[in-house]
Figure 1 (tube, rainbow, N blue to C red):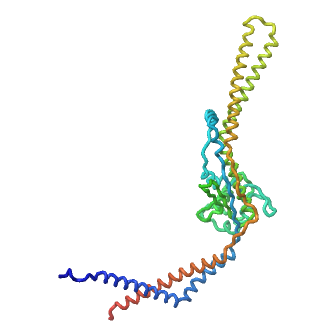
Figure 2: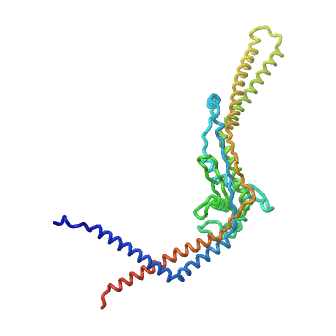
Figure 3: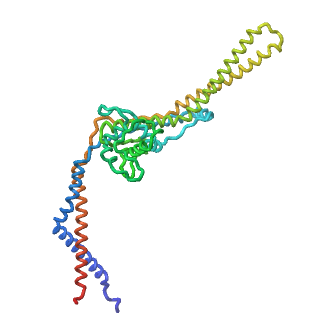
Length: 375
């Protein structure tokens, strides 16, 4: 008999959904009204954030950022099948392109340090780029004017580099160098000023730098690129250069032996030109045999030397700059619109959370008071 009754369960579900949706909308209206009633509270909460962002907009110095793009051609070392076999036979071979390794080198302490200790003229003053960086970034007034965080950490207040012999640096000089390196490549306390990235599709690599001076940004970025290029070329050809020097030394040794043997043979003939017995001519035959052997060995060594020279020239990677940084650069101030947006955004977010949580607590306390029976 119950099978003939209509199914009204879906009506109950829809009714519950309508009630829940209505309750949510009702609660949202309550909170919205609560925010409107407490607009003064929202303004008071926003005010400190607006003042803070306004202070940053007025006091944050203008920065100058630029980029340097380049590419490395290492394909020339792979040319020639027969020639490649010959080069491999004397211990010379080529390696594949590795842009990631180049960028890691660019961020390394070695490259950054060599760049920082280049002497350049900025604003009429010739000094190490490291000292220009210290002055222009005002490290002595800001970063290095703070109390050391760790026991035994040297104070860098008033420090400037007076020499570039890093191997002879003392504890204070090493601390200053590490501080500069951390500011450039980034650390737990600093966002990186220097960046390096690679476009895997095009093979073009980009170096970027951001400082408070147009001249410092351009000079330091170019110095980093120059040091990176020189170091990478020297490191890439080190094995070929060593092989070339060994073969050249062997060729020079054989040339001296050949010349000495030829001279002794000629001298013997001059001193013993009237000898007729075969035994008297035996030294001449031995010298002639040695001369022919040295001549053959010298010829082979010259051929290997030419191959080694070609391999060395062919192995040198071609570091090709594409876009070098040039003045003028556009300074980037701490924007007023950015300060206003951040100040209002942070203030309103905290203000809305404060008013909403306060209403929630008040509603719960009011509900608990109504449920408590009167004494």
